[in-house]
Amino acid sequence: MAERSLRRIGVLTGGGDAPGLNAALRAVVKTAILRYGWTVIGFEDGYEGAILGRARQLGLDDVRGLLVRGGTILGASNRANPFFFAHPEQGDTEPRDHSRTLLATLERIGIDALIVIGGEGSLSIAHRLNEMGLRVIGIPKTIDNDVRGTLQTIGFDTAVTTATEAIDRLHTTAESHHRVMLVELMGRDAGWIALSAGVAGGADVILIPEIPFVLDRVVEVIRGRRQRRRSFTIVAVAEGARPLDGEAVFERTGPLPYQRKYGGISLVLQKQLSRILPTEVRAVVLGHLQRGGTPTPTDRALATALGSAAVDALADDDDGVMVAIRAHPAGQATWGIVRVPLAEVARGPRLVPLDHPLVRAARGIGISFAQQDEE
Ligand SMILES: Nc1ncnc2c1ncn2[C@@H]1O[C@H](COP(=O)(O)OP(=O)(O)OP(=O)(O)O)[C@@H](O)[C@H]1O
Ligand SMILES: O=P(O)(O)OC[C@H]1O[C@](O)(CO)[C@@H](O)[C@@H]1O
Ligand SMILES: [Mg+2]
Image (cartoon, rainbow, N blue to C red; front, side, top):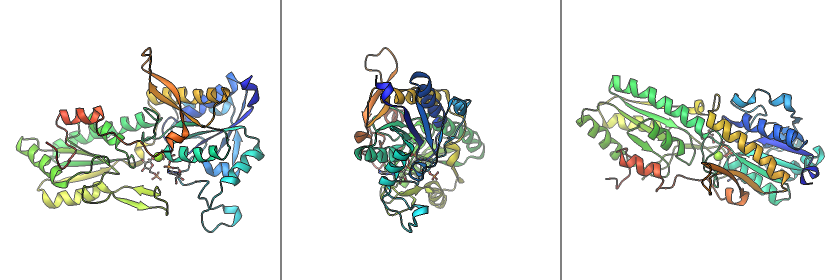
């Protein structure tokens, strides 16, 4: 039987943490033990633990209470990349390719297959390791929701819930003080959080990386609202948003193209708008509040379904795939689980399509994206 051929599986949580990671770990461990009788080894701090051999067995007692707990009991890392890693015990002064070190570590610990719970970055790494012969199953998690092949990632719903609540709160104070409030939301190169929370929170302007903005258009919206006796304006800004004639605001964290840390666009806009407008303009960077705290019921359910399905995929002898959420083709349920090749996931981040129904609806109700040719 397939389930007897796999006895000892590894699991790690890569990239930034996200609410629901622990719920996914719980589902992996419980399904592996209760349904298949396997042993589960958890690697600490993402790929770092898999390279350095920092690992521990996870039993049923270790995952008790995890459904509602934010973060990840294994620790995470959004820096440790086995293909570009400075090994502390091998005297590396510069990062180099340690993918073979990782494979040797897994072999030494006796891992048959690895479940990688990660975002687009960690799953791209998982794809490369799979090409080198490691048996891998991916689970999509990231508050950014930027993973190809799945409708939704674990953590996104919680981040949008937190961001929406923040916009709701900013509304009342903005209105009382007749201010322009800019709220900067995470998401890297994708605008999913800003779009979803912006629409759900009733923002007046939404700036996302997929639609480069024109500052004059933002000014026009604020002035237009004042003329209609709306004395305040809420602007939801994705951290990766960029002006049509300029660049996003980020720091480089390394030489590779994806080694960027976004943040600060709302403060730049605050200064620019303050120079032009008589109105008071304030900026709020919501930051890691979006990644913290207990997962929403939706994220708990997705994490449980995806975690359990990843173990089933291994039991079916599947390999090199990510378990994903798709609209249910037969329509008996609102969603179903499919398996998507990691090669597809590694093609790059999933950005907001310009014809997305939320973009259309936002425009329909008068929300501005500050686009150059906007009506
Ligand atoms: N396209 C890529 N190919 C290979 N490695 C990547 C890629 N993008 C990012 N990485 C590396 O993968 C690791 C994790 O990436 P990243 O920080 O983007 O997290 P993630 O898995 O996408 O999750 P999250 O976006 O939620 O933080 C980092 O070491 C990063 O340098
Ligand atoms: O925790 P750090 O290293 O500041 O990373 C922040 C980044 O991670 C994310 O929260 C998740 O990918 C992004 O939205 C954000 O740009
Ligand atoms: Mg990512």
